[in-house]
Image (cartoon, rainbow, N blue to C red):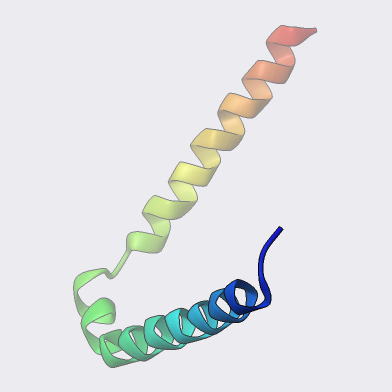
Length: 62
């Protein structure tokens, strides 16, 4: 399905991409703590809303 070169390229690309993402996140960590303080509450609220929709779906299915 894939050639050996394509598999090597995919693996190398994934490793370099993840390394670059980690590097840039570490570099901007101080800015994230300053400007995105409290964003974890938004994320938890979003997960709670999705969970509530799932529960309502199961409740209405019965």
